[in-house]
Length: 206
Image (cartoon, rainbow, N blue to C red; front, side, top):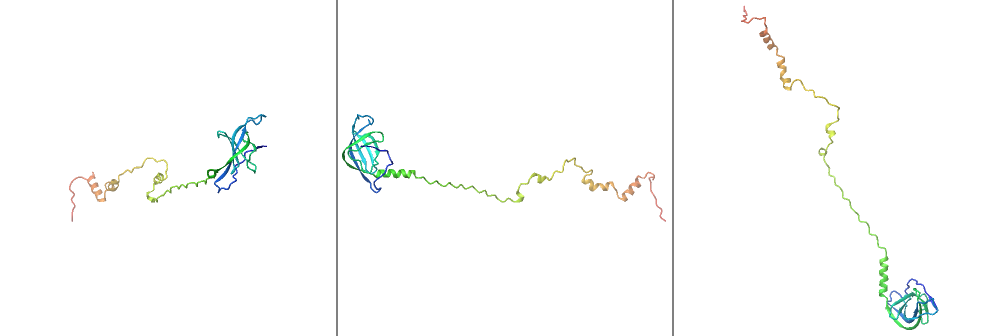
């Protein structure tokens, strides 16, 4: 009987609390000549891991040849023929015995893989606080005023400045020189009158 087994996912048949599981070891014959009528068989060893139903085949030098995952409910027994995933035909012969394997490293490896595949929480973005600019209160008299407010509204084109004819001093003192008083005017008229001859004027008193 030849059993062609495809490789399903690994299934553990022992509880996680159990740290060991039995492994059955057999002698076997294997060949790569599946299509030939006359096959060349080679001696080897077969191990059946009961905790995950994995079949592993080695040559006489204990070099790994191939494997498969056993899908039948019953365990691998003597006289069973099966085909490995790589296309190697195997015939199970004599059972050598049963050994015990430690499952702790396997469970630890699966736990590490599960934790590494677990999505990590996205860290919250850091809040950047913007500095608050403190603006002091500037008195109104100390603030800069625009030039236009200082110069006022332009009134158009400007000509020459009109200068006064008389200086302020002349304005204050010149009127007295230009307009003599009445008494001074009579004295000046009397002196400058050409019709009057020079001499003494005698006034008769009766």
